Image (cartoon, rainbow, N blue to C red; front, side, top):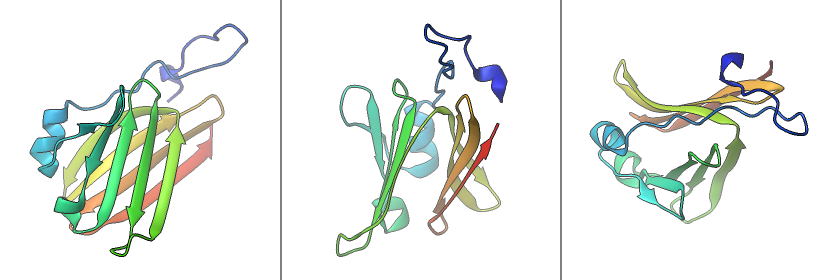
Length: 130
C-alpha cells in the first residue's frame, strides 16, 4: 500500500496522497440512502433505514477520516469509532452481503475497516505495522 504515500512534507511527515470515496449516487444505488453533508467536508450516512439499527457512518475526504457511531434503541452508545489515514472507501456487494470497506495507510500502519450493513450489522477492523 505504500505507493499511496506522498514524498516527505516539510518536517519529514508522510501523508497519504488522497482519500478516494465513491460517488454519492453509488452509495444510494447500493444502500438506498444518500450521504448528507454534516459540515463543510464531512458526509454522514444514516443507516437506520437499511439496518433497523441506530447506526451512522461518516467520512471526510479532506480530513481523510471516518467515524462509526452505533447506539442501542434506548440511545446508549455501543460503538463510537474514529480513524484517520483513510485512503479508500468503497461499497462492496457480494454473496448477499453489503459492506462499507475503508482502507487506511499511515507512515507506520496499514489497515482495513469493514462495516457490514446487510443482512446484519457487524464491524471488523485490522491495523498492522507497515
